[in-house]
Length: 118
Image 1 (spheres, rainbow, N blue to C red):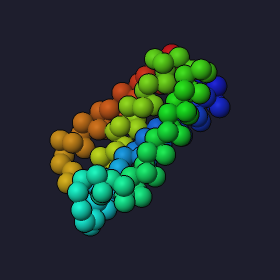
Image 2: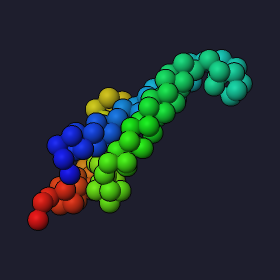
Image 3: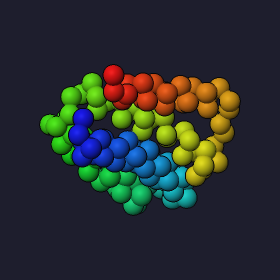
Image 4: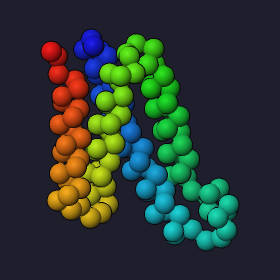
């Protein structure tokens, strides 16, 4: 993998948890809105921002897959998935047990193993 491809995949890995944080923000914002579910959807500007963010990241993912084999690129999406609960703990003060922390540490260790050069 070239340094540019590694950088693109890394941006994607951090874009995923950023999108999840936007969806959580939209969910919290929805609780402050009045009206039906549909009306809350239409008034929820953080939700529209999250959808737009996911659209941009989907295009980035497509571009990455043009350049990088899926077997290499997908490890970066797993890295992003492992970062979501850490960011939720930091940003939204969601609970984090030692078991969750250990599991996500193992995911990150797996990422390092899959990206190591033999």
